Image 1 (tube, rainbow, N blue to C red):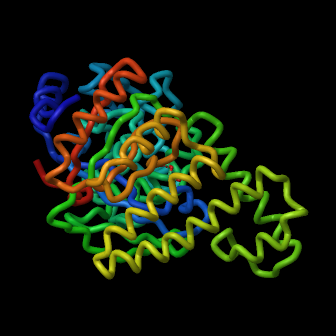
Image 2: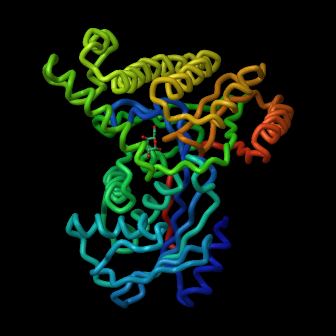
Length: 387
Ligand code: GLA
């Protein structure tokens, strides 16, 4: 774990050269709309005050040299003959260079880059998307590539598909790049555009409880969910014209064809269709500043993720069930891809201290250790500066 000055010291010690570009790429939370991004639905993420910092400098050699200040490891490769690395962390960064090259960008010099940060790994806060997004932003600035922010999000996503093997949606990169202080990003994953919704409730805070169970999206379960959605869509397309994704499906269309479905695929599709409906209600609740209704929808989403999409785990369910009994908690659910990571909770500020205490005690009793707890602030997305 590092902060900006730690990364800067590491850069200076590793490269003994002058830094040119500094990038800050934050992690993300997601309030609602889970597993809907790759179904062309809406999501409600935000960037947070935990980030990865990058420091870049061109090196006038043919090599790219990457140092991870958190792991104290480095990888060096000829920039024009990139290959996947045995260091899995390096592939997130190399993947970005690879995708840029696929798109026809040429590099007339190699470069040095040192990176590190304080986004907990495997906690569902999208440290990998932050790394890919930050890398892309830094290279864009270093070589004046003039790539738009939206295209950078798409490049970062492609890097994850091709070099990390996860068929993820666009949400995580987009949130890291487009985050805005005290706002949620209502992202339309069909035409990849967004609007900002204010999320600034004086008496409430967003708190994350980390199960400590490391989720691993490379785990084929994520990719399986995605292909189950595609199967469901293909089946429905036999009966309905012009479906481009599950976004175009409503519950009665789905239920009228239930007999045709494999029961598991049916459950997955039902979750996605219901989550889309919850997104509509959640947006309305936010517009009305009705955080109570919003919180109730979060609990419903958790049930769907647990019972229909089946991406939760006992530790996540335990943490959600625990806070349900707390009067100061408006809503809670598992967040992100699932199978571990954090729950996201909206908690009344005055109650946070006592709730943290109770959750810690009960989780320790059940699982033998005190969970990490993060009170997060909604912050700006990626920033790039000349050093
Ligand atoms: C992971 C993926 C995202 C999204 C979420 C689930 O974070 O990277 O694209 O699908 O899971 O909502």
